[in-house]
Image 1 (tube, rainbow, N blue to C red):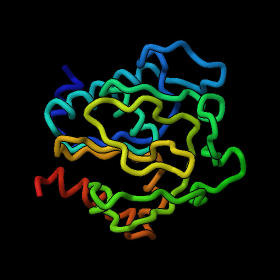
Image 2: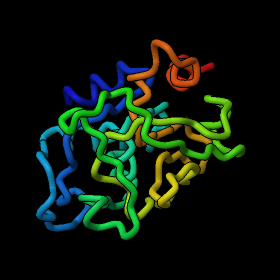
Image 3: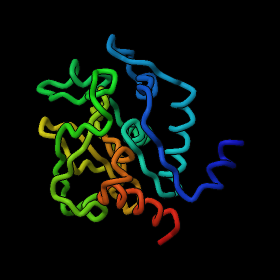
Image 4: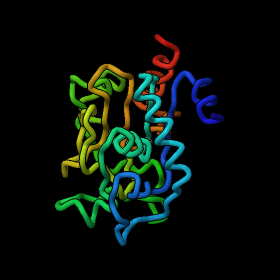
Length: 195
């Protein structure tokens, strides 16, 4: 009841990055390379996301947030990209490995037909990459527009016009200096404001 009341008070929901998702949320046993999980956080974020999908409330997912969107909509994840995705390039440029959070690791091609393209207005978007999980089976109701060079899904959107965007990178790191990152957040704020 308290969570629903909080949800109702919000014009939009943003799901940020964080720890790994518990594979129990998508019906799989844990892989040996699964990192730290937070089942209580999973429950809250999955519920908020499902309500957003049902109500078509604006929803923005960042890194783990993209993964939450996919799982909430019925998809699954690679628990460890390197171990489970053949031909994967490196995606885990974590600060714990000596990389800065603003380390640009690769570009993603942004499809001209995507909502993301209308927001960032770039064909190729340079992104950071600080994750070792990713979308394995894409949920029904979602479309995956950009992918990295190895084929991993880098962003998802709703197919029904609902303002729902999930990106696998961390645009908040670049928001202060990069107008394209700013435009992603501005688009979310405009949608939440009903514009």
